[in-house]
Amino acid sequence: MTKIADIRAKTADELQTQLLDLRKEQFNLRFQRATGQLEATGRIRVVRRDIARIKFVLSERKRSAASQPKA
Image 1 (cartoon, one colour):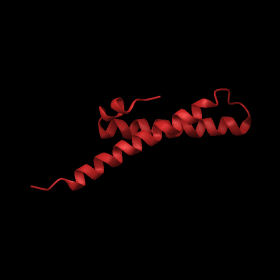
Image 2: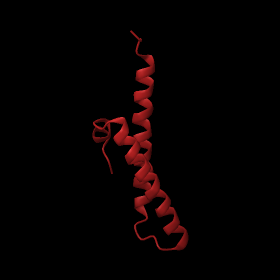
Image 3: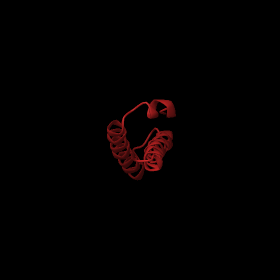
């Protein structure tokens, strides 16, 4: 599980890369669950929450950038 402070310390490009990796992992975990090969069932929950954390930080940054007055 990734802490929110660790996520906030990363750049937007790093977060996008990590988000892509987590989505691939999520797909693989769902595939394993469907075929009955998944052993670490709790990992699905952790990955899903990490994805949500990253998306939250990205949207938070987007909102703060939009509210900044342009000079």
